[in-house]
Image (tube, rainbow, N blue to C red; front, side, top):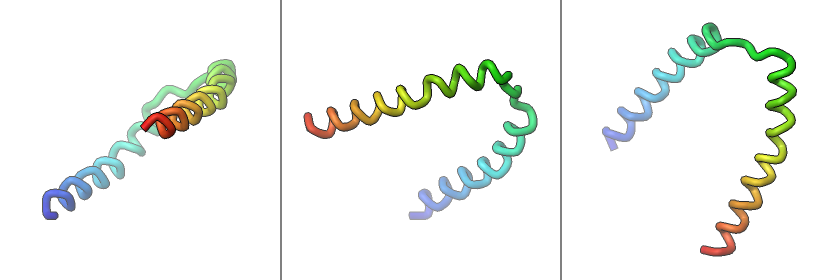
Length: 59
């Protein structure tokens, strides 16, 4: 149990440190890149849901 709490504490501290750093230094996408990403998100989410449903029925 101690190992689990240690790992969770390290992950939580890493998130507190890394998220602000990533937000500060990450390149900001252009509006064209954002539109391109937005165009692909819903079909990929739908595909992942269908695959998860298929996997659920096969097991």
